[in-house]
Amino acid sequence: DTEVTQTPKHLVMGMTNKKSLKCEQHMGHRAMYWYKQKAKKPPELMFVYSYEKLSINESVPSRFSPECPNSSLLNLHLHALQPEDSALYLCASSQAGQGLYSPLHFGNGTRLTVT
Amino acid sequence: EDQVTQSPEALRLQEGESSSLNCSYTVSGLRGLFWYRQDPGKGPEFLFTLYSAGEEKEKERLKATLTKKESFLHITAPKPEDSATYLCAVAGANNLFFGTGTRLTVIP
Image (cartoon, rainbow over all chains, first blue to last red; front, side, top):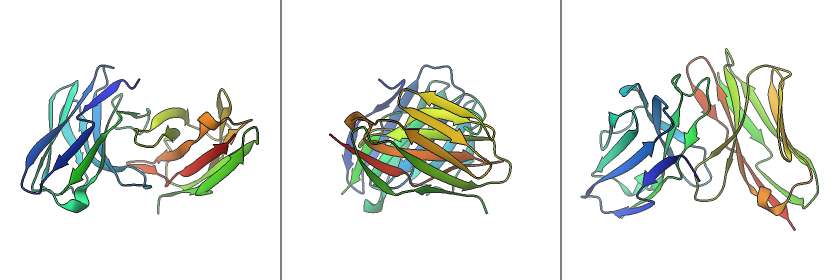
């Protein structure tokens, strides 16, 4: 079982909906990440939080809004998405260092479908 | 320019048939090379970290090695449960780069 828990596992939303993805880890990691993964492609970095502060935003459209309420929780708020945003959204955590020195621990993702 | 290339793209092996997956990289200031395993519909699962040329790590049927230009993931006597996509990720000075993965299928 993964130590990074993501909910929901599946989400179908219309282009006018607002929804949120949630991620929780209890490994004491101080860096948390959102990745997007399309079928048969590697994960693409979206956001990095280090010590609960946003440290990296990879030019992600504003329809994706991250939030880190505390060191264990990470949310991704979604609104006005496009069908091309359909993908597997992965949360990950690592010891501080933005994943450059220590491995990422991934959740099993939320499979998002935008209709 | 920093980049990571994995080969082959896909590999089919008979059960027990050993082979190797390759991860070639060009990065300034290597900070670490990571191997992950990903099953369909799941998140990547961490396997190994290698930090310097000459380093080797082993876990069950898997062995990872590192040179200054590439890393190999050797699979000895694979079993069907080893079927997955294996991802390599290379950490440079400021970024982590994922390869496109090798999709391994082990046939009973």
